[in-house]
Length: 56
Image (tube, rainbow, N blue to C red; front, side, top):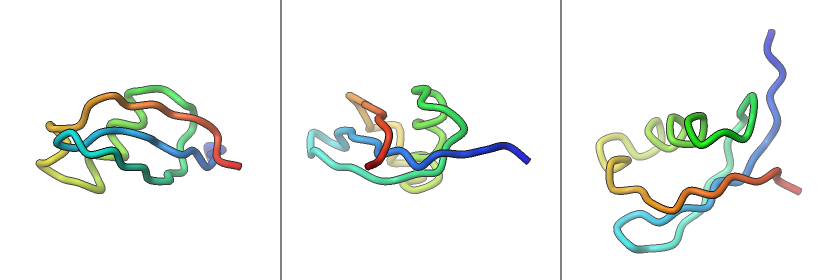
């Protein structure tokens, strides 16, 4: 079983600032983009300025 940590992902979708929480194995951009793809589906291609940090 892989350990996961709760992260907050800050990003822009169509120029609008947004954020979501996700359980990820690490804070890599690739992991965050995959989590956002699961949330937003095809709209994930419009996501820019991804920042990942540990949730408090």
